[in-house]
Length: 119
Image (cartoon, rainbow, N blue to C red; front, side, top):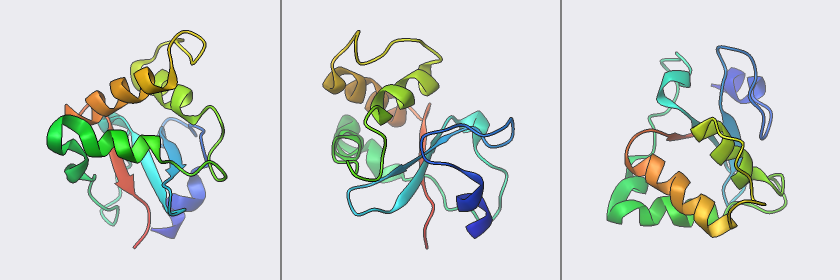
C-alpha cells in the first residue's frame, strides 16, 4: 500500500501503469482519482468510494469542492477535468463549479474512480 502512495506525485500522471491524480481531501488524506482503465493492478488497493455516487453525485461534488487548498495545486480541478475528459478545456473556459459538476457526473457514472490511499 505505501508503495502506491510513493509512486504517485500530487496532481501528476506517472508512467503508463500509474495514470491518475493524487488529491487530498479537506482532512489531508490522499485519494487517487483515476479512470477505470488506469486503476492500478494492486490487490491491496482500497475499493473506489461508491458513496460519492449517491444523490446524483452530490457527495462527489462536496468531495471536490472541499479539497484541501494547502495540499493540492490551485488548478487541481482543471487538471482532473483535463485528465478525465482528455480535453484541453481549462478554468479559463469554464467556471470551477461547472468543472466540478462535470467531474462529479463522471464519478456518478463510474467513468472516474476516487480511491482512498490510506488505511
